[in-house]
Image (tube, rainbow, N blue to C red; front, side, top):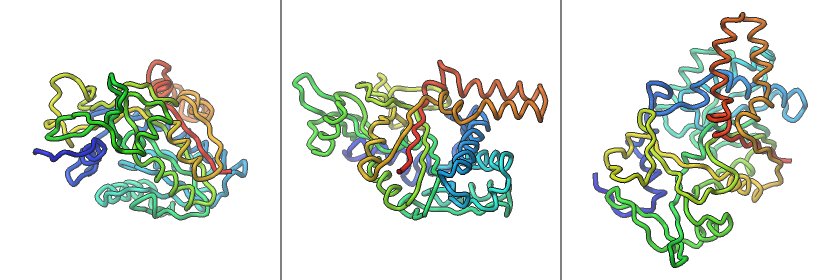
Length: 340
């Protein structure tokens, strides 16, 4: 399929979200898919978030009738793990909390609804939204795992003459032209991006949450850093193989919409997007630090006391993958933002 010339952000968006895009239909995650996530690694990832939610309600930061909202739920596994651990830790909360998912694709909504109803029946209140702009609540605890690296992005680099160039795609070929977009130039200057990606849509996403949810706490995990690395990080995942976007002889036309495409997130850009809307406080940590702070070790000890040594040892091996300093534990970062 030949494509007319378009900004890279449009190409990226079509790759993932067009009618036949990669995320339009359910994709297997894990060993049989193109990549692993923390959710597919261990249920204790969601369990630790569930414990964080219980503790947040216990300390009075959120009320017991708040909404637990997941953005980008895929199959529904993460929310199910969160619910299961909330039930284990404080079962009475299932009768007061509302659980909700933001999912743009009806076919994925249907799969998520079936999975959660099969898992919990009428023990939970479950709602769906097609877009974050539709969510209007008095309070919410919002969870998003690996969503910002799936926001469209623009490709930028500064040439030898010091002129900022922007990436365009025509017939699956990337070429750079002088950037004429004043907003992009302003963002590149602000974050000192001389080469790399700039996420598109972070500001709008933050604005919807800040303007429409009176009291919120937002937690997200993703690949990235607090500052841009000034190199291209955009890459493609296919059956657990990673292809840098600019790898020589890479045939984008054959990979388009059939594989996952992603990039490293600039977490400062996300923080600034929220701070532009309202007064917030935030915590930025590695996944390792965050899950330990959330109480994942305490949960493992509970498992050992109640399920025995063999089950404990099997789950501990999975949790080690989540926390491994040379792997997921350091490569993934957590950002926790709440309005004050």
